[in-house]
Image (cartoon, rainbow, N blue to C red):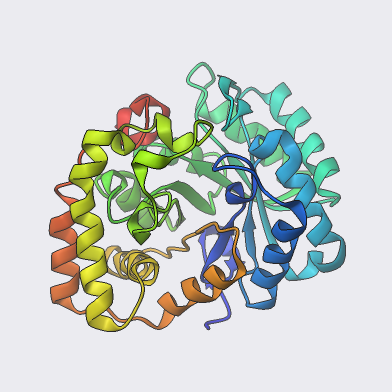
Length: 330
């Protein structure tokens, strides 16, 4: 495995990251001891870019990751986020991007994480009531104070990224991006490439759907995915076609669907000219080993063409409220 990928602003991270939201009850109940073992296995395997947020599990995800950091802080590139009020499982009540909130949020996260510095601090969602310059200006103060090393933005438009970059270098944009979520390629990905900002795709496996292991009709009542339009019964049935294509490509290469989906993203990054570091989440250690196989998987032009055609036929938005993500504001 390559040792590092350099995102924007000189931030070096592992070529795959780990999305911590999977280790919260958002997709069902979680055993905390198993979750901690999975985190340790990730770092043991070279997946050292660990991504969390203050609202995952109402703060409990940061507290879980603190147990890893207690022993291995120097091995980890740590990312967390501020801005959402509520939890993924119960729903969000507000978005805050004002300076006072940011100052409080970072101190709460540092306390829960048991560390004195965050490597990459993201604005989780855009607070449209607050000018971008105010939000990023407050974030930049945290860099000056030594509480944060690099700044990131999640689900921003190209224009929002440009406005932010005029205030302080942005190391990474984190947005949903995968074979079945390609709207970011229209505007924000080219803007990031032009500005020297890296891209961190979340849900690179389509919240599990692209792996062929998710039956949308049998999701639990508390499963976050039940609120996403493309998981609705009619849409999920139509979207099985993209899963079938991913599976066919995987079979032809002796690979798994997850490896194909991740390799596709890495190939897109090379094609579009920017560093791309996906952050798949999992509860199972062996899935980390599987995901790492994507780093050595080469997709032929015919594979890329087939996957591109399948992505064009996806039905349903990736968000219950498209204005919540960049897709609805571009």
